[in-house]
Amino acid sequence: MQFTRLQPDPGPVDSDALLGDLGLAARAHPDRPYVISNFATTADGRIALEGRSGAIGDDGDHELFRRLRTQADALLVGTGTIGQEGYGRPIRADDLRALRERIGLAPSMPLATITRSGRLPLEIPLFQDPDAHVIVYTTADAQPPAVPARVDLHRVDSERDGPLLSAALRHMRVEHGIRSVLCEGGPLLLSGLLHERLVDELFLTIAPLLAGGGPDPAMTTGAALADPARLELLWTLERNASLFLRYGVRD
Ligand SMILES: NC(=O)c1ccc[n+]([C@@H]2O[C@H](COP(=O)([O-])OP(=O)(O)OC[C@H]3O[C@@H](n4cnc5c(N)ncnc54)[C@H](OP(=O)(O)O)[C@@H]3O)[C@@H](O)[C@H]2O)c1
Image (cartoon, rainbow, N blue to C red; front, side):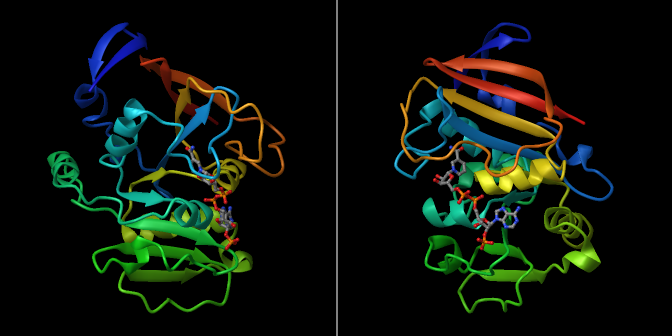
């Protein structure tokens, strides 16, 4: 799919060239995977319309969304988002499996999720799919659910293991060999990751839409960072009046 790159090197650019190989695995930290996050927002900062994000992104956003899934060893998504969006197994299409294999990744990817309560939306297609692999990190005294999907449940003891998300990412890196993670949200999870300084890059789609108000969330929630994270603009793309920004998070 064609995008117009506004910066750097202005001109037309194809998603194959842009998102064929971001080289994320090589950037893994010794104690955690390299973490990129992908969000789509309206121009007035809402990330859902009537509770769902699908109405925000157009085909350019969809292309970015699926291509980013070909770049990471694992997906990380909060239980609120997998439940509300009705997540299924992240990689199903043969073309996406082939794109992953072309850059030396496993054809499919596990989906990791976080819950303090231990409550999981077991009715969604993800948990009902025998080919899905879900990794759950929880502080609750929960047992792996009896569902068709393979579910690895890891109990995090914050006193012993430290903050939940840092402990989960360390476990993913050390025990599962996961070198890169794509976080697809939602706001509670992104805020948690930002507070623990665990985000390396942000891919942000700004859709040419104004929600004008309403109850739908913004990208982050809860307490503000004492020291706001600073961003470095790595690229700006345009397609059909949507903007696609890639930021590096400076620490
Ligand atoms: N436009 C976009 O790009 C985009 C992307 C993602 C989501 N969304 C939208 O965001 C909305 C969902 O928001 P949400 O805030 O409910 O989503 P969320 O962050 O996916 O899920 C929140 C739940 O995940 C668990 N969790 C997340 N972060 C945690 C942390 N740091 N520590 C412990 N547990 C954590 C908690 O589960 P427990 O309560 O069980 O402890 C929490 O209730 C939906 O409307 C969705 O469409 C939009």
